Image (tube, rainbow, N blue to C red; front, side):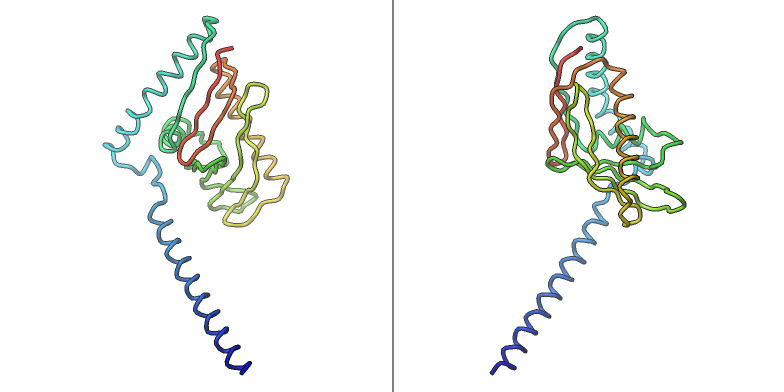
Length: 198
């Protein structure tokens, strides 16, 4: 009686394992198809559409910066979609000296993932750093939780170095607009920053 029960459990386990393998394969296929295309590989029409979509955000940032420089104290809120952030990163903020090329951001509730192609001590491949964003002393700061290159987890010291570089670049970008950030909200595919001119 026990051998029949053991065989039945073994068959159920094998079926469950096959089902998991099929689901994992389907997820991988979906992920491969839904992976974002780098901006440089989009056709000219799509590049122009995305640039046009980002234009109002850039105008809003210029307006906020102008008010801050004139010492006008105003509240602001800016909302960015994942696509808009990626357009700005890939089209306007490419740094040929950056450790990560073709950067792209993925936004999920409370989490930001920065991905791209990177090189570290001779190891080249897809790099991914995941973390959270917070507000500290009126500025946006990134707190790295994990870092992988070619799927391999990187040591804590490397993660800290990458986190510092991301925060340095964030600081440089925000220093051009004298504002005090009060909140950053990360939702699925959307990031909202609110604050006041300083």
